[in-house]
Image 1 (cartoon, rainbow, N blue to C red):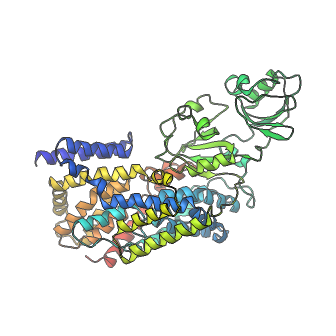
Image 2: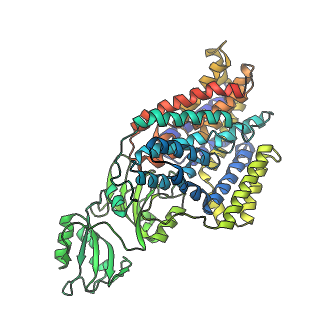
Image 3: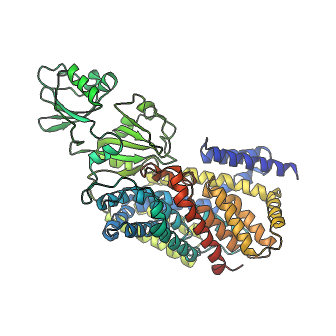
Length: 606
């Protein structure tokens, strides 16, 4: 074994370890591996940087722009809202319809983007039918993964294995090459969740009224704030008259939060400079003891009993979840200047393990280091809450009580974005242009026609994914050049000497699936695709079934919450535990992989 081979395996081991530890961003780790290979001269600089010019990487970036156009013009939201009309009333039918629709959307958009759009839709759908959200959010996430197997552009692993075929001098996969086995896997997945999986899903808390929509009180109760709101009037003799909110300092001095101020029926902005006046009616959030002490201190007239959690008409509560790539992850609300930047207040933070931090009972709320998957209860004017929902890189809007129905935001541009996207799919399906050219042509046309703003182009691209893939490609190249891939293939040959190709495919799928549970699906595909090519050559079979198996296994992320950002997104809103994913997802993962191993050779013979 040469020194370059040893260095490459050391870099590979360190990269996998850092991925598993999850101490650093994935793109930072990938860049670190790239630099390590370049500094040690295992690969030349031009090879180390070649990933950034890879057609698959460019195509993935372009597809983010296409997805942004469908999102920004309201097309994706509009489609999602129409789920309610066909979902039916029974839980089984709702699961089937929701999973089928989600998979269809995920076939043409990223799985994370699909779930981000459909989470509030499915939450409202569950509330109206009296179905606990926990019964639908996990099927929603799993359906997004199943949709990743339907088309070439569904997920980066599909594009990466297709590009591996191209680099090997073979015909790359076509747009619908994945569709036949993908539909079979989808049918198996939906059938499992509807018949067996739903019996293992957590029971959750059932909505008490099937017909009513989610209210602000419902949302407040979910975050442990139910019954914590009281109403007080400011009499003329109160020392609060003429005092600003900043001077009163209710949160720091009295452990209460002023939620709303009404004067003569008009809602005032709850900002530090606001001055209290006689006759003001204020809504205060806190424990009974803290609120009573606050009222006594300022001689307020406190109404008996808890008030219904209601805000002025132009204000509302919303639940947002932080995705993995949110700029708030690893920061505190204070550091992020949340209130100043987003013009909204965070009342509470809820975590997947059940812990909650609320504004009136924890002085450390603003200094809490935020994590991916944290659910934030946010209060603000409706237009600012919608702005939060538009920042999909930082927030996923899960629930907004009494929100207006979603309409196509700009009908001409919505129609244009659909037409351009369909044209792109048609060109790719018939192979009239190289796939990367078709995607870039669609992306630039969407910009030129105003379907997506130039300023939104760079914001819409998930740069972490782009840099991750571009940084991992040189590592795969180094394994190939130094003989590391050959050593891995030789080890498999020794173990499976004389075995049939389907046994090799099953082992390859199992290895890929195992790696995919601790690494990202893109990193897994980049590393395993070259091995699949070499294995096919070693066993004298076509590489297509092996590469197809790699793509399917890399995207089969059902058994753990850490296997995919999509699983993290639904964990807190669904109140899931780690073991819930294992109980529900592991059988599904085995079923999907078994389906892939059985059907792929029928579509792509050895």
